[in-house]
Image 1: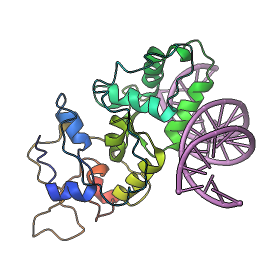
Image 2: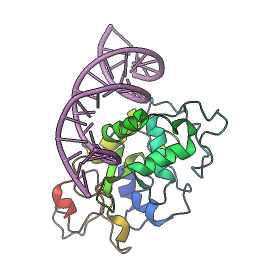
Image 3: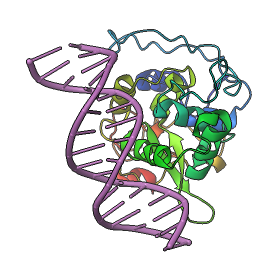
Image 4: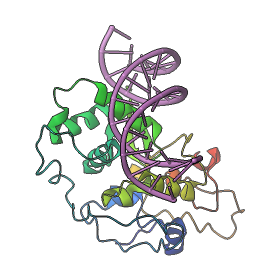
Length: 227
DNA sequence: CAATGTTTACAAGACT
DNA sequence: AGTCTTGTAAACATTG
């Protein structure tokens, strides 16, 4: 599917085969995207991606295991699955709890330590980012760093790779950024962010960037990028 | 106050 | 062997 906000060279530079915009605006046709070149850098990272065909994100849950057994998936995996299974690819903390309990009965009627671990993982791992406040102002939506969506949606939750990818996109840590994922009302006609008009001074973005994740690699995000 | 979020510490395994 | 990842625990801050 065409993504008219990002030209192919820009996408290539980013090493991303889709963006959060893609996820928000092209629901339903997921998974049919071409592979990213991604040839470099990732070399020795194992390729044991068995989690392949979980197209619908739901059904695989705890499947064959005894529901009372602790899931073998890491917290990163559980949180990511919850988020990716949501309509808008973002969830409140309480919804993440709920999804995990719904899909992994092990966590039901368990003490709260696992919730502490969930919060700990959300805070600690760069692959999880805050995506706006909740409606009631209490807490944030949590989303997956766009640089990780591709891997995570394939069931590849390796953090080392995840971290490298984030840094390769942003050139720095993901925080602090003032605006995350405000993209819902983005006009479809916006021109490609990575190819500004010729008259535009270099390094001076002329138009609003819709999420820091879509910033070109060669231009480090700054506060001005979001205003 | 309870829920949420951040941070530190430590141990066990996995990885390089 | 050193580093990284993951899970667990816990202290503490923030927020409604």
